[in-house]
Amino acid sequence: MSESRDHLVYRSKLPTSFVLSCIAAPPRASRPPFANRARRFTKGCFVSDEKHHRFLQVAIGEARKGLDSGGIPIGSVLVIDGEIVGRGHNQRVQKESAILHAEMDALENAGRLTASEYQRSVLYSTLSPCDMCSGTALLYRIPRIVIGENRTFRGPEDYLRSRGVELILLDDQECIDLMTQFVKDKPGLWNEDIGV
Ligand SMILES: [Zn+2]
Image 1 (cartoon, rainbow, N blue to C red):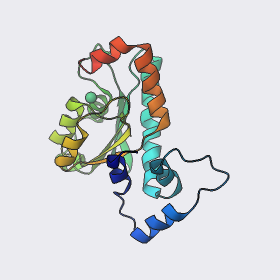
Image 2 (image 1 turned 135 degrees about the vertical axis):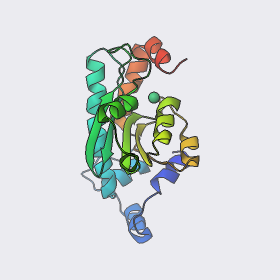
Image 3 (image 1 turned 90 degrees about the vertical axis):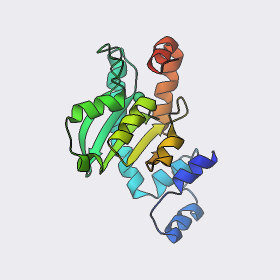
Image 4 (image 1 turned 120 degrees about the horizontal axis):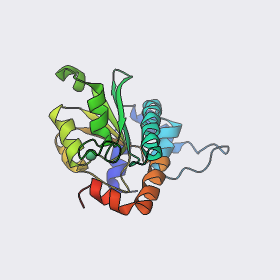
């Protein structure tokens, strides 16, 4: 695990004593061994991360919808006050769109929102947002982005952090598998989507 991932894991508002008790507690025998500490935290201790996983599952559903319709398997949801207000998936193939990445599609489907609504929203994406989607999040001052994975592609995460955006990386195996398989199957389409 890289230092940056450790940094994300420790970005919890839970009391230090509780966090330490989670670290000290051995995983239950009935559970499979944790692949890394981030997963151990998210599944074992942090209630708020359970909520993130729930919304990520909806984003994964969008990604699969995109894959099933011949597109790129990346999904996204926009959440305000615990409710999904927009969802979408990459539309490069389906709508011949150069700009409807999953995050843009979710924002588009959320329709017009006020500045204060954006400023208390959370953007979920199965993949680390690219320059375009990150820029849109900055434009609307979306304060928090939850990322399914950043192993197959990593957007300008450090820049987002430097601009005050909180990033939460879930390092989700299903997201990793979806993109790994897709990049293997259709490298040309993937390169087209990220301008390579
Ligand atoms: Zn994008």
